[in-house]
Length: 410
Image (cartoon, rainbow, N blue to C red; front, top):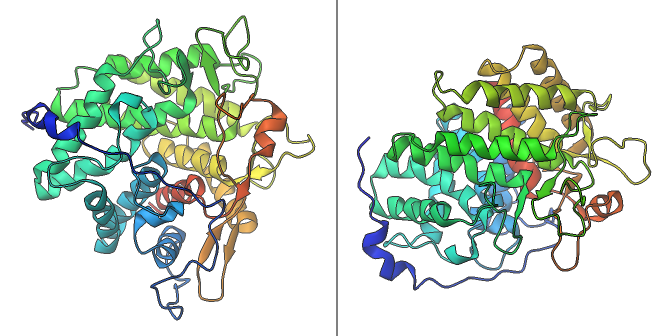
């Protein structure tokens, strides 16, 4: 595919963008069915992936509303949800899923390709994730605004600050830090853009991001990965010898596992780093199944099932299910991991899925958010991870549930 960048031709336009603020709801409520007929019934004959997708559209006619925001916002969580809708569109052929994606993109991206509210100079790697929905939109429409927006996000990665060992910072406000979350936010987009438009000349750099954070977060005893690494070892949460954060958070490992199976789509079979990435997926998966609860689910703090306050958490569980199912389908993982994925999905349906009389589906027990540092300060302790709000229908859980269900159906 030939391509000539357009981003620099309109840089004067891009710098005029303005930040759009928002105030998120603490919890999405079941009563948010505005503008949609309450008589709409969601059929229980649909696959679980579509049952949840239809429920989301019923509650939120436009994707930007799924965050409980007052105004449209470009963020990684909506990108996660819409990535799952892309999978549904590909598997079902139902145009409503693609329309849901396109309406969001066209609400946030103007005719010049300017992304509303996006501020490149903040160097927040989370902002890259939603860019993945633009590749297919451009392929189908050839509308140059999508290419300009893609170029904008790629330009961030070209100058994104890095650790002295060459790993992407999680955010400018978190200097010298790599979080497992960041691999999902940046690497699949980076790989897809690079293989489509740059002849795959950065795949070594992409693989190196996985390599670097693996080496600095792996726990030799459990095989699990700590949430983050501070190369400077200056953060209060960082071990002063290793720079590792102090605990295992299931969703952070879920981000990393999903990033692995998605980024491998762009690594040719003869690429020298492909086998290494597959080995990481196998090692992490082997470690994770040792901590799978008898219910099929995983705990918020992965290795502390018996500790008071810990709970079986939906988002991390769904991310592991997706990574296992796709890993088996692609031949990266042994077939036994399909069994673990099926067990996890059954656990979700039996324990963390609620269905209303009209068929509307809800996902419960989702950790609303978690991180490190910041203000108020997040210390990465067990007590911190279990103190974050537990919510229903948050995109951290709904997106991975659809991804997992759709992967298992295939």
